Length: 158
DNA sequence: GCCAACGTTGGC
DNA sequence: GCCAACGTTGGC
Image (cartoon, rainbow, N blue to C red; front, side, top):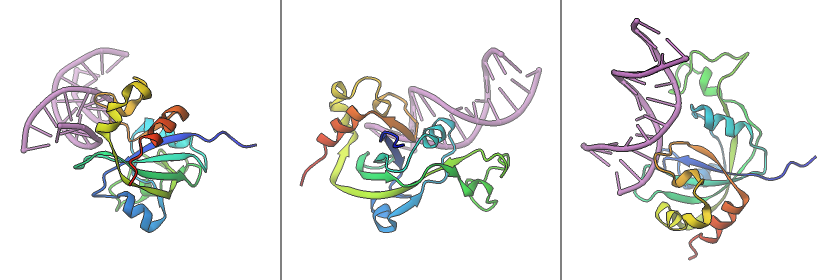
């Protein structure tokens, strides 16, 4: 049975992990997400789902490229690692609190599709698009097929 | 660096 | 279960 392909947007600070980093390593476990809503979204992910790779907290915030969900969700190992910044003393192996998926590089945009440009097309994306909502802090969020299509049409071409 | 928005924590 | 305090996110 083939579940329908779904789409997501995942934020990252490029100073920490950028699209270039993903291109180099090819596949990356998306560890360190410690927000329940974001976690729940990752738990819904299936291999093959599309990912908009978003650079946040940087000079030019926006979508830097595309990635693909490479695994179903599994427990984030950093929650058990006392030496990790992401260690969670309240999480147990029997009932892990935090999940992650592996994310695979797909391609890098010729230029970042900027948040500014995305906002300029708010009408096409719909008011409910969380990325352009005020005060949005969610690091993993769902994107509809229509929004995905709209955003790819906005991709900067060389 | 600032600040608004939001999630989490902890006292009661 | 409420809510103030606190920490974090993220655009600017």
